[in-house]
Image (cartoon, rainbow, N blue to C red):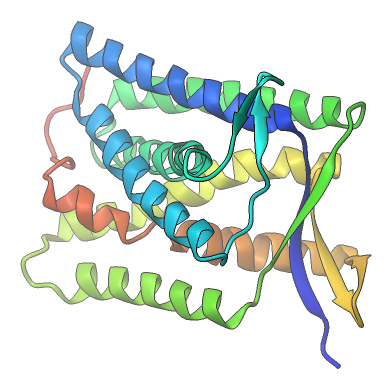
Length: 261
């Protein structure tokens, strides 16, 4: 019998409270950039990709494909479906795609605003997640698991990667600069995912488990590295968000101009 691999993590109600606060903070920050600097494309990227991923979360949780228990924001406000998918939609889809978008601007035309934004937010989120992972060991927690090599997930991931690669590589209307920007977008997704995952993995809050005969075991170190980074980080985490770049491209949110000072 071949083992089944699971992405497992410890979580608390405080996790979703943090994600909710962070989403609101990013939204207000981007509104501030729009009003004070005239930088509104970042806001558009965040809202569009956040809503897209929220719809995916609504569908997945509504159909039972993904199961997330109810939670309490700030320990008091009861939150469950259909509101919880929007928190996950903007914290994952919206935030990841926003950071990848700014990574593209850094790599394509050395945008100083994007460099400051990406580096500052990356450092802050790395510190906050590291502190949260350490603090979680002193709290009551629950463990959540999801199968990694589920056939449905593999099919969906293959479609996402195949459609995205096909669109940017085979579409003659896509310029060479935009093809290049697509690969930078992918690298940006991998980078921000690594920043989010590595401190949790090191702290033992997120890890790979093996299920054999209905019993879960902590995967060996080689398995942890191969599955967590060789597969999940390189293919899975970034792959699902690749089609979002087609939307960003069509809304002309990626343009190649002089750098923002």
